[in-house]
Image (cartoon, rainbow, N blue to C red):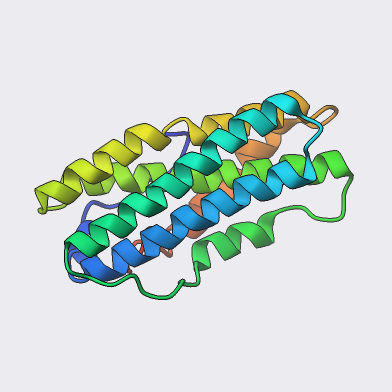
Length: 193
């Protein structure tokens, strides 16, 4: 379960199905933010050639997923709404340790990114297994498979470049924090809601 402590209740999909336009709009913007996040990490840490290569691939994939979600929205006769606030991501952002060394800030950003990717992938799995719309079920299955490695990429680079940091210990703290907040979500028709 990607290391997550609490699985999403499949009944969340019943909420999602009440407003497909909202879940797709929210999902599209999640993909755009994921691409921007990867580019931002590259910009700040461009000296790591392997990281740049891998995060460029992720950024391209996330933008392609944004395009795929947008095409799905159009094909269903829906409209891409405005970008949504993501309370879950904002809570994770507040948990990031700030004010440390450049390396510790780098590791925190990677762990933050890994956590978002892990929960997003888990939500895609729940959607693919429980949504009544067969086209969306296949769509979310394909995205889940495609994105499954993103969280391990971020986590792997945190471990590789987190010299002097107990990354495994800090990741366990991230998992515990995520477990404590995720109980407040799963009641809105958004990817993390």
